[in-house]
Length: 165
Image (cartoon, rainbow, N blue to C red; front, top):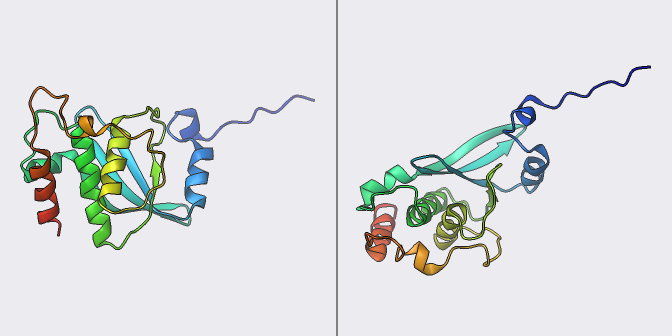
C-alpha cells in the first residue's frame, strides 16, 4: 500500500499564513493590531474576526502623517511607525476598543524594530496590549534623535491628538 501525500493549504505553501499562530491569535477573542511594513510605508489595522472572516475596524497608514506636519523625508522610519501606531490607537479609542493583541504575521520579530515602535505608539494612545518592555525601541530612537534631520516630536504628537480628539 502506498503512503498518501498530504498537501498543505495553499497559503501555507505560498508562505503567506502561519495557521498555528493565526489560530492562537483568533482564540484570544480580542481585536488584532496588524502591523505591516512596505517599501515606502507602515500600515496598521485593527481587525476583528468572526466566523472565519476578518473585518477591518479601523486603519492608519504612515502616509496620513503628512496631514499632521510630519516633515521627515522617510515615512517608514521608527518615529513614523510610532506615530502611525499612535494614530490608530486614537482611532480605536473612538470606536471604544480598549484591548488588542499584536499580529506581526510572518515578519521577523526583532527587538526595537518598527513593528514594536507602532505597538508602543498604540499603547501610548491608551490601548492595552501585552508585551515585554525589552522589545520596545529606546525613547531616543522613537523621538528621532538618531536622524540627520531632527523632528519636532511633541508638536507632531499634539497635532495628531488635536485632530483626532
